[in-house]
Length: 180
Image (cartoon, rainbow, N blue to C red; front, side, top):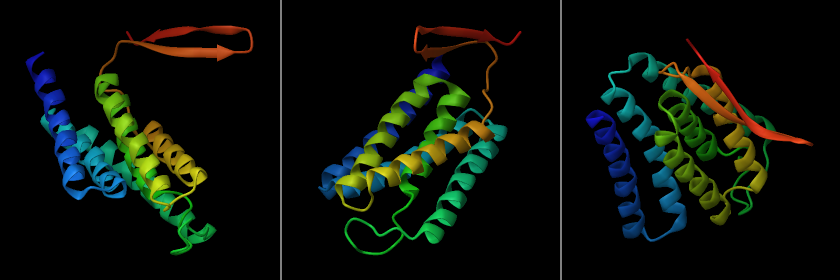
């Protein structure tokens, strides 16, 4: 339990340092850039503090795949940015890389790690739209690419019982599953 508390504190410290950078920089765009660096960095630090070499490899696979797919699409689709700067708007690399790392943290270590990472990732996406670097569809697709890559390459560290919400036209509930 001590180790878990320390790791959560370390994750919070990384996010606080990123937030301090924001206050000094003074712009939403810069704070989004800091968050885009902080989430993958925190994921790596957390994995190393767990001495989780398989996890580090899965993080690299998730992050690398998300980046490769995003860059391939960016230079194939050639959508103009909202600010008119260039034609590399679609999809957002900031979104795909942060969501790959956030998805990795959630899947590998649980919601205690994933939820703060997803929150920062959502902020990063919003900052890209606010800065007129991306359209909403750019960050949405980027986030989906990152999330998908994390689901493909990341395996949960712990076996146990997992809960998943289910919703359909006439059905709402929770599915419990486990590994024994």
